[in-house]
Picture: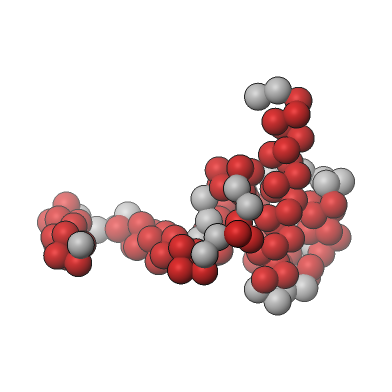
Length: 116
């Protein structure tokens, strides 16, 4: 990744953090509680004065149902609301399937195939 691509990724990340916060009507403080930081840290992430660590990134992705890669490469604000909802549902299912055995996973796959 060259310098321009890196700057673009950082810009997109800042834009997406701000979008997720504002589109969910959250204050800096509310958003900070979700990811475990104070409100000034969130403000610094949005302005580019501070870079987020991987733990906070993971928390954002899990809470809002977005992919980490998308945070740096896509304009999440342009996503269709249905797409965001489907990603959120998918992430919830994936979190639940970690505790399932192979037979349970096969049954889920059969149900998905029926829905298709």
